[in-house]
Image: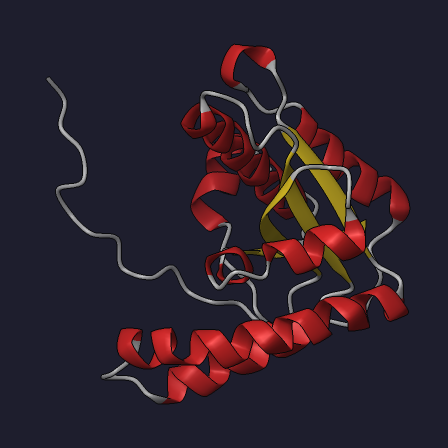
Length: 191
């Protein structure tokens, strides 16, 4: 798959097959995250790939708390499409059956250029998503756990000395083929 194809065909996957991801593929995906550009090359990220069934159940337990708090946000967001609330909550609480959930951390939360550090971590996340898709592995970037205040729970359980929780990424072989949502026009200018 070439770069443009990966960029244009990658979709957020919310339903996965039960097939495990080979360890070599998972390592390559994580290493792609490590290859991301970063502000003054500080490489502010840390990844925890959760794949054991017991640890995934712990992630899902924390996500249950996320769902409780996030439902009100979803009800406002999907006021015209209320069935989407249940669909989204089911995905969040089950991780869509993903065999891997990557937890992403900002190693230096007290770094003076927090914006630059967060941009660096975001670039690493995008590298993970694209590297996974290149191998036919779907993904979904989850910001709700951090937004709803559950970062400390993930940090304490999975990476107590690795900084601040930023996001989670589900990984697995897709059991759905979502279409590209319409893209909004007028989102760039060439001067």
